[in-house]
Length: 224
Image 1 (tube, helix red, strand yellow):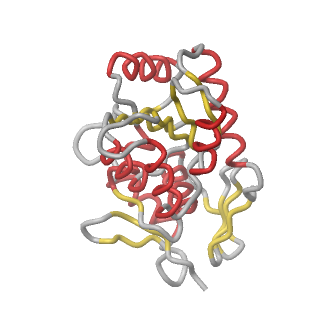
Image 2 (image 1 turned 30 degrees about the vertical axis):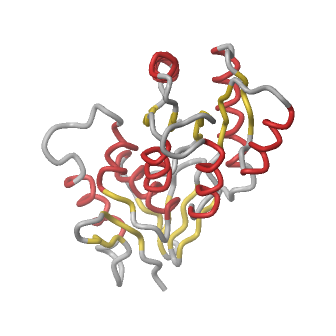
């Protein structure tokens, strides 16, 4: 999973980040509500772990603004020492999906994150359709105008990331983070993989689907 933790208690935040990364998950972190909201909107995570008492913007307000401004549903797990029912109801009213009271068990935190990520994907179609492009989420196989696209692993993952974000533009840094996390290859790791993707996705067909948005990133354009 790709997770975003917004927590101003630095020792606790460090422990949570270590726990999640040890399980193979990618974790972004912010200690301030304003910074955290910008990160959540710019690169929506699979699950947002959100402290209630934050500097800048408190967790309740942050969750409300996220629901108002985001173009997708980001699962929110609220982390707080407040265990009164009124506090929980306030969090749910703001748009939280789940609530975990501090102190909590590591295994329970992991289980709730996984459950939220899975729940968020329930109801999403296994087959993505963008114009003449079809992608099977389960197998990763893609077709354009009924023709199977023979893609290598990394170009295949790039195409899926762009398709899941469509019609939004995906930034270069977002793609790099999704593909390689914090261990990206040196120089320009995307260049050759984007070239290979274009050779298979666009070259044999009329019209380009993979578009470069200069200064921003890349997006898919639905073909007829």
